[in-house]
Length: 483
Ligand SMILES: Cc1ncc(COP(=O)(O)O)c(C=O)c1O
Image 1 (spheres, rainbow, N blue to C red):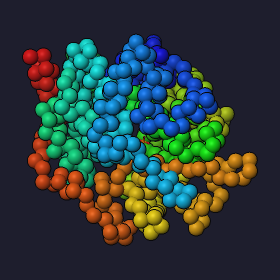
Image 2 (image 1 turned 60 degrees about the horizontal axis):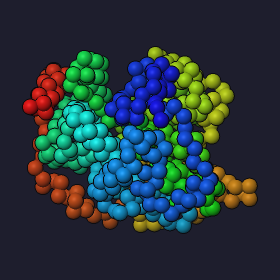
Image 3 (image 1 turned 30 degrees about the horizontal axis):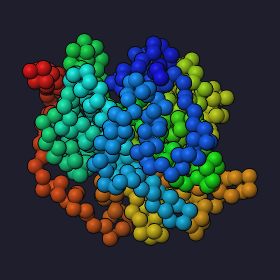
C-alpha cells in the first residue's frame, strides 16, 4: 500500500515515509492509494477477537508484510498495550440500551493512547532498524503531550520536546507531563496560549533544512498512522454491539479536531455498517458544516468544560471530505484550498448531501453538566466532560432510559444499538464535578501520587525568543545522539 495527498499534488509515499510525515507538501493530508475492504464474512470471523487482534487485522490492511513483518507487528502491538490498566484495553460499560466505550484505559487516561502507543512502537521499530535518531516536537493544549510522552519515554533513538501553556491547563494534565523524568523527555512551559507557541513550532517546521538536518518530526493528530490505528476501535465497538453482525450500529463521538471521526469514516468506507453522530461543544464548526454547509472558521475559540475539544480548525475533516467525495483530490483541493485562503468554503451540494449522512449535535457547558449528573443518578457512572457531551445526544433522544426518536432504525422500526465513545477518564477532569453536583468522587491513588512526585520542566518566558531556545535544544539533542 502506498500513500498520496488528499489534494493529489504529491507522489506516492511508503508507509514508513507516511509514518514520519506531517502535512503533505501540497498542504493536504496523506491517505492510502485505495481503501481496503472488509467483507461481511470477515466481520463474522472477527466477531470474538480481542481488541489487540483487531488492531493487527486493521494495520495489516494498510502495511505490507515486507515493510513490517507480521510477527514484529504482533510483538509491537503487545508491547503498546502492556501499560494499559485492563487486558481488554477497551472496556464497555453497559446500562440497558446505553453502551459507553471506555477508550481511556491507557497511561495518560485519554483515548489518544490507543493510537499513540502503537505509533510510539512503530517509530521505535523503524528508527532502530535504520539506526536513525529523531527529535519529536509536540505543542499541546493539554492531552496530546502526555499521550506522546507516554508513548516514547525511555525509548532509544527518540528525543521528545513538549511545549505546554504554563498555568493554562489543569494541574493534573501538567503533572502528567512534568513528572516524566526520563532522559529523552524535555518539557517546556511557555508563558502563553498554545496558539502562540504553535506559531513558533510552525516556523521551525517551515525551515526545511533544519527539519532535514535535525530529523525533526511531529506525531500530532494529522499523522496518518494515528488515524489508521483508530479505525480499529470503531471496528471493535461494532463487533461487540452489532446484533446480528451485518446490521448497523450507531457510534456517537465527542468531536474536536475530527481525528476520531475520520478514522470512523474509514471504517465505514471499508465496509463496516457503522453510522456516526458527532457531538461538538460550543466550538461547533463541524456541526455547522454538516448541518447547514456553513464551513466558516469562528472568530475565536471558546473555552469550555470539554476543553480538549476547544478547537477551531478541525484538521482531520479533510480526510472525511476525501472519503465522502469518493477519493476525489480535485474536490478536496478546491474546498480546502478555499478554506485555507479565506477561512471559509462552500461544499458542492451533492457532496454536502452525502456528508449529511453523519448526524451532528452541539452540547453546551450547561448541558454537559446536567448530563453528567443525569448519567450519574441513573447509573452511578461518572463520565468526563467530553464523554458527557456525547451522552447529551443519547439523553436528548431518551425517554425513561430508552431512546425515543433519533438513531438509526431498521426496516422493522427498531432502533439499532448505540455506543458512546468515552474519550477520557473522569480522573483526568474531576474539576467539573463540584459544578454538576456529584459529591461521591474519590481521587484515585495514582492521581494523588502525581502531586507527590518530583517534576521537571523549563520555563519559556514571554520576552524570550522561543524559537531560538528550541533550536538550541534540538541542536544539542542531535549532537548528543550522534556522540
Ligand atoms: C478527551 C478528548 N475527547 C475528545 C477529543 C476530540 O477528538 P478529535 O480531535 O479526534 O475529534 C479529544 C481530542 O483532543 C480529547 O482529548
